[in-house]
Image 1 (cartoon, rainbow, N blue to C red):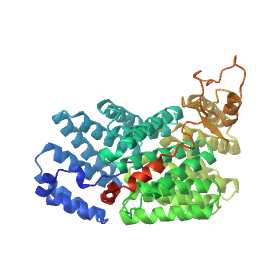
Image 2 (image 1 turned 180 degrees about the vertical axis):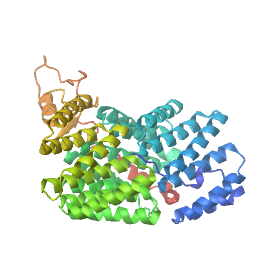
Image 3 (image 1 turned 90 degrees about the horizontal axis):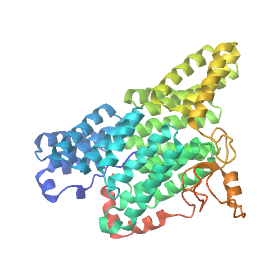
Image 4 (image 1 turned 180 degrees about the horizontal axis):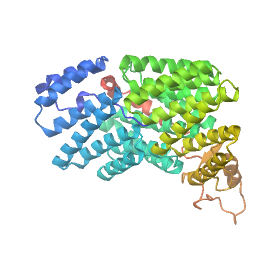
Length: 474
């Protein structure tokens, strides 16, 4: 889910570096005009000429992000590994942190979640918490835990990223990094929207998606390479679809698709196809939906984007289940497809998806009269639910499997909203307002307050003179 913008800006280079390396500057101009292939050719030529290791590290970063944008993850890994080699040679903790972060983000998309988490931890070890990379690493860590369905750990990481962004915001004019603040806040909100969406709290998912999108709109830059803007459009499409606003969801998704095509952002385009499939499926246009999912599956497979692949496969499995229930197809095809999805989800470690897939398989086995397999799936479902630990500490009733209203405490433990309200209403001094999971005193009911509006102050930053330089960022 987490991705960082390519900071293609002259401030990343010394004036001496730019004056001696015109190919770099030409590549920057080409990339910002959406001529990515021409830009990459320039940078490859420049890479052969550069001798200084620090300059080479920066250029490798440019190539890494450009190849990630094309969905060429295996090639981008080579650039990240080359960055790490340079960082080790220079014995630079900050450069190591950036290289490890790039490795973590690529392995995340390839579905190697545990390896990605290990790289992210190495990045945090090398980067002090007040440096610019730390917030991006925390967002990546949170996204990885989100995929692994360890939601409390995901929230802890997002909380850290939010805190770092606030700290940078206070110094943003001094540091001249307003876009970094903007990006981190919007990315945290998008991640929170995704988290609550997976936990079936549609209202909170929509609230955070709206905060992210509104924050994007505060920056008036007509830059089609703005990845954060496309990501915000897709998150809005996701939440609107879940709210039943299919027309608006379609419009947001179509706009993201258009921008992705213009900028050559294959991962974003593939995701938009999958989301369009979700919209068609909810409108019960099953034929159109399945074609969208099939296209997304093929594109994700060619990129090696296993996360996008299993999401598209899950959508296709839902279409097959509808057709099976309508008795338009037999049980054989859904059975085979869901088994293949279960195998892939198991390799990734996506436990929530594994549970959903086994529920479908359980129903198919029941229809086939295969009691033995059905019982086996039921046992595995129960085991997965125990491992997920998605149980309210107050009422001991599971959450996240059905639509409900949830609250997150400052300690990042998740409870039913009704349970939190009951705790906060306590007036008896003998029964303190404490979290039932960790017994920490509850001072507020929300993890990130609804009236916490950092985008207002960020907007003020963009209205300052530093905003004039934002258009050269991607």
